Length: 255
Image (cartoon, rainbow, N blue to C red; front, top):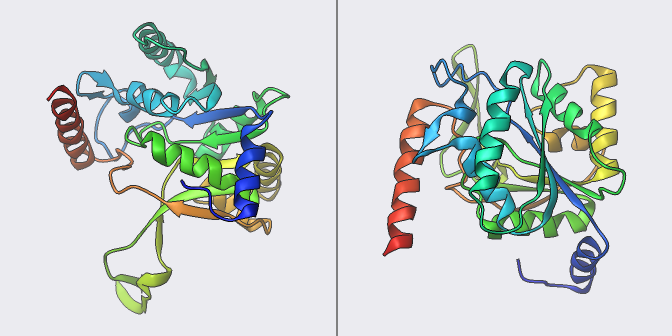
């Protein structure tokens, strides 16, 4: 993201100097919508587990000091094996990676990750374990954008007509100009996201994404343009598309 405006340039400078960014990767899903006995984050995508591709994406910009992969307790051995195999295959320096037991809901899993953050962590990046295609440019743009308000998310505009329906009957057609489809990674100043999660737990509120917890306590969330290829692999159709996209990228890299 180009630096535009004195405040934004200053914000980028402050986020990059004497700061430490840690990433939390919630990957404790059971894969119900995928219809697979194996959790979706462990499914094969072009010869590697989806989770391994996600770790590669997060590591490529060189911004992350430590990654916390959060999985269901019974999945910890499998996750550690994937992390170990992935780390052994890397040719350059990589972040330190820890595998953390998750909770009943995504909120609980992220909370467990937040509890493991080191004292000197300044910024927290939260990224779905099954979003393997976030580009280095997108990750850096969200990271830099967090300097605006302390919280930043990527989102893409809706290209479809959006309607609100109740009981199968349309009640309202919403303006597409105001509709954004939100993705991860999402980046937050550590104290902002920790406080947001503490308040959510106290009130029993789960939210729909990490930023919604910050919004709920009155925090401003900055938005940068997301990428349509940055999909969350959730259904068999998603996996088919992801496999095609990955193999296409590999062929283009070779040629």
